[in-house]
Length: 348
Image 1 (cartoon, one colour):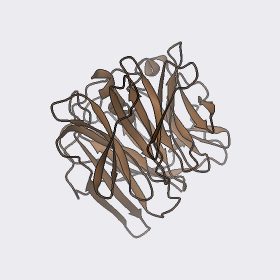
Image 2 (cartoon, one colour):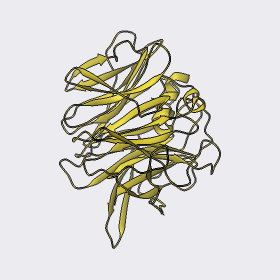
Image 3 (cartoon, helix red, strand yellow):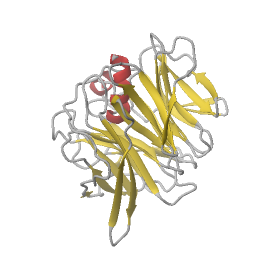
Image 4 (tube, helix red, strand yellow):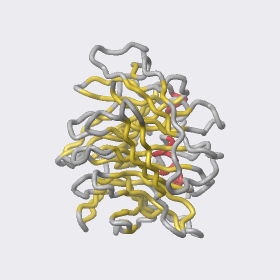
């Protein structure tokens, strides 16, 4: 169960289960349907920086909005819809934390901000009779994918929520002991990870056909996102134990490592190829599998820039839509070492 639990702590706290050991989280509470989010704007002057604290010419700046749920130390915004077929912004994620089970609740939120007002409509996305769950991905039609654990068991199952119904996703591969779904695109293609007794692998579900894949030479692979062009992004660990980001397009793999990175995870890509994720610059951060001091990254036109929430001790970027809006998590030390809030970063 340790590896399975790590999968969920990782995506939301930036620690991938295939590579990590889970740090305990003391979050508590459960998201109630239609509860509204407490939020505040964060100054954007230092929103996008390089590790050297300089901003490359042409880099975007952002207005940050914090998303934190009352009564919990832990809120994650795991994904944003692409916006290719809808102007609506839909976010999904999880909140609360139960030792050994991952998140105790999950949510979807419709978000709309204008100069005059901001509207946030929150909906619980909670499969009955579960002890742990999280919503990991959403497309423009509002279809949601994630994972759940049935009460009284320790096995992870993926799910698709479509038309108000939860449909279980369990890979059919020999030796599989757990499945987690991480993203769904507008064509209904779903990506995620599956586990055997020793490691993790990526999978793609297209219609009723499951395809398993591993980055060449990797000892562990996780597929974390797929855009509307069918490009998959994620992370893999090589034979030396170093973690890198990757993309897979038309059977061709590409590697992602910001300059100086000791640990990289690629988590999202827009349809135009703008890419986000998070990375470490120290051996301590790499040894902690993306904790305690990672930075988010944004890649566009071959240039990496770092995403650091002002005042945060750690920042993880998890998704980007076609308008350049980024979602993720950050930690600031409030609520304990493992407490975190979600964020939404809107280009200025």
